[in-house]
Length: 350
Ligand SMILES: C[S@@+](CC[C@H](N)C(=O)[O-])C[C@H]1O[C@@H](n2cnc3c(N)ncnc32)[C@H](O)[C@@H]1O
Image (cartoon, rainbow, N blue to C red; front, side):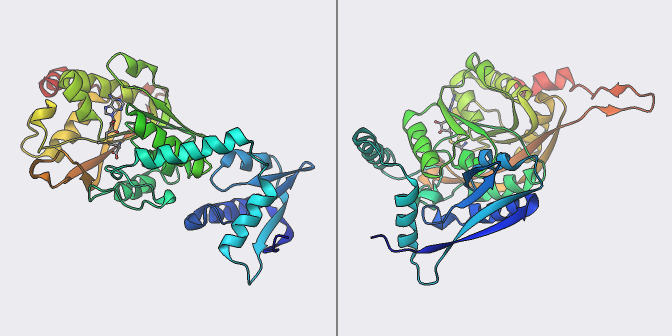
């Protein structure tokens, strides 16, 4: 017989209280598999609310209070016991084929991450740092702060690698599409998304080129991190600039950008960013992304196994591009933003 390790508390919560409870639930990261669920009873149906999945929370919309059953651990319960009980009670029995598939997925994941994650960590799966020496967590902290309060409804992560930024966005309840050309990275990212139970997160395996970039969807938040110099290397700097402009057209609210700035610039067909890469990039972004308000979010260490000297870690400037809203003038008409100087634009794009 399974040992009883938690107790049910029935209560009525207001919307805001429920949302706070779900947020708190989602923050208990190390306990992803151990945490007990919150059950919400609404319109005669009991649903499980997973803090990482807003879809379920939407069930409660339109009503001011909901009946909630919170499962709380008994004082002497162990984490492992809670996890086992939760799995036993809620999971339907897997078919033999599904069990074999899960095993294959696990083996494939362990094979794919060899010899170690190089660019991004996956802390939710027990890989808190990337092998390269610097990881994406500091950049994420800056991005998370920048989007706080803006309630984005969608996000697009171009060059999503193993999914660190995509998962981080999805954990905020934002539907996300990650786009990545490397098959192993996509497999790792999909595996991680499933382990984190993020159902509104997808990954497309796709090489973004000057022609395929038109296939990318529009999104409130767009990440263009560490991928622009790959474009420049593959298609030339002028084409990479055009791709940047097109990506920005798909962004409704904010885009985050960084690129190679020096050590590998020549091999990536990037021009010298003189006299100062931060100023040069800020101007480059302003001139090629119409109606963008460009701000500098900081300088961050980034993993780069190609960096000269084999150090593997370089510093890059991180920028935010916010879409300028057309402002109504005193005569009631919308004022058009000033177009970037055509001559200067050509000068910077080569
Ligand atoms: C340096 S990593 C940066 C990953 C992540 N965006 C970050 O900043 O941590 C670049 C990623 O973009 C992917 N990539 C490069 N060129 C691409 C392209 N044309 N289309 C899609 N993905 C691409 C690479 O496979 C790699 O995973």
